[in-house]
Amino acid sequence: MATLKHCPDCQRAFGFFRWRYQCPKCLRTVCSDCLRRIPATEWLPFDVFDAPRNLYLDSYDGFCRACWDILILPNFRQYENAIASESFITCWPRTYKGRIPVRSDSRGEPISTTWQRNRDDADKMLRVHAAYLQFNAVIEIERMTEVQSEGGTSKKGTHRYTAWKASGVPCRID
Ligand SMILES: [Zn+2]
Ligand SMILES: [Zn+2]
Image (cartoon, rainbow, N blue to C red; front, side, top):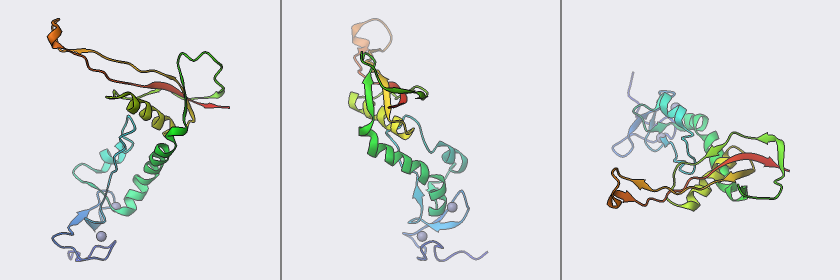
């Protein structure tokens, strides 16, 4: 089989700065400019692109545009929408005494964040997660502080390490 001289997607010639890349999904060769990497979704506590990463990306960097659009784009859009609507998520503290207008048929599985260095990040991560699940409200927000000791009982080995974690139940409100 003759080696391709031009990228089939953008028609530009391969060369030193435009190297060949084989898409691990469709196995077509495209150029490095047409290679699309998996975007970071740092405001979610899990990897949304875990499946395509594990299935196709053993030693590759990304996909051709067509495969990226199929494998990555829908979840990435959902993530971007979640980031954009995160501030509209309503949260109540666990200690809230009033009546929260939760629809009885609309409770999701409890969610929680990973440990975060600061409080606002934990809060935002929980909101993004709820928005990603397309729930519009979260109750039972909880934040925790941790003190880690590095073995032994001496005070010197104790690090006051403050970390924040938010958790809650996604739900819909009336
Ligand atoms: Zn190209
Ligand atoms: Zn492809």
